[in-house]
Length: 481
Image (tube, rainbow, N blue to C red; front, top):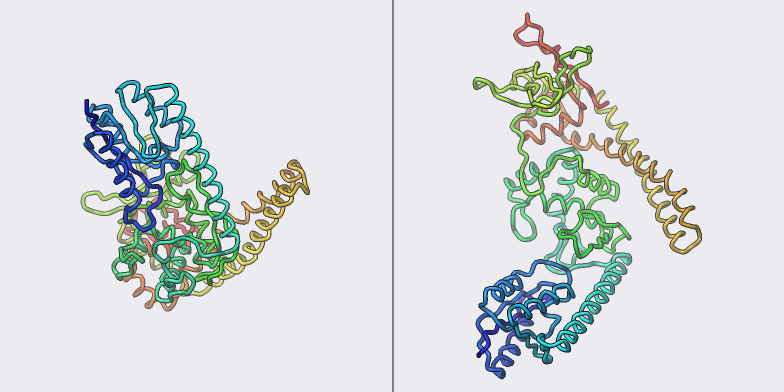
């Protein structure tokens, strides 16, 4: 009976993108089918897909489905390692051969899966292919690490945003947007808000596409833009590249932002508590949601303290303490949204116009420079400790004892340092009351929230005076400085 053959071709890396590797494999496989008198019913090409990494191989899955469905009863490939570099997957192929009468042919030599000797040869070739893949992977990891430690330029493809095609020269037209993005993130503005603003201003990526929060996050968190080389080892089971890698050296190219600003923005963007959506927008229609806190006293005399949210009633927008089941929210406080937004705006602008608030914020920001120096010193001490243990100058026990107080101090200082960059959002905004009002009108809600959160930690809303139509005294500010 004439066999119905499916040709499977695969290449791990197709740097040119032309598919020439799989085309050559297909040509040799068709010639083999012609010599055997088999009919080629389908070709299954997985171009630029690694079998070792565990990445999905759509055409491989399609081939397995056709084998089980009886469409294909013979598989032809260039070599066994084109099918798989995993002994586990090879066993699946052997099971298919037993169950479906599958025949396997390779251009590089005959393998009869119907006999014990043929299966042994297939397993030996599969094990050798796995060893070669693992050895190659380790060698490539070491090469990438060495290149990173030397601060060399890495990667192919498109040039990085902010740099020319040589990947070394700063492209100032784009670099100014990177500095702007860093400044706005440190000011607590959302990535989605920045992306919307850049879209309106026609600021696009190197590929000519509009910025998305996920891409902007990776750009601003990259150590590259601070002139440092980052190494990000990735395990084969990880589907996505981690956001932050290990900074191992100063790079051979100049930085667009300072090391200090880079460390700050990396901490902000990697903070799990930061409420961002990577691929979407968390557009807030209510300016003060989460900033206002319910101040209605409970039975024990303490304020409710629950975050107030925006909720319309009879067509009127209001901030309310929510009546969410299963929470301690009292649901007993509400305030008109429009009048509250205007009052909070005027209070914040008046505080900024006085100058005293800005002076105190600047004092905090200066203190941040000292914290930054302490953080860098502790990070270097940890690196030296690890090197000492690696070179057996100290024992593991000594390393653990010395490491603990440094890590505690480092964590404490990092938490403090993350809070002292609030002044960044206010630079270029503070001026006369009238000027700030004009700028406020041009801002979106995310930018306005950034201004407010740079000045206040929270605002408590106490019960209103029933004898007043509008009671501004019910708002109690917890100023940052």
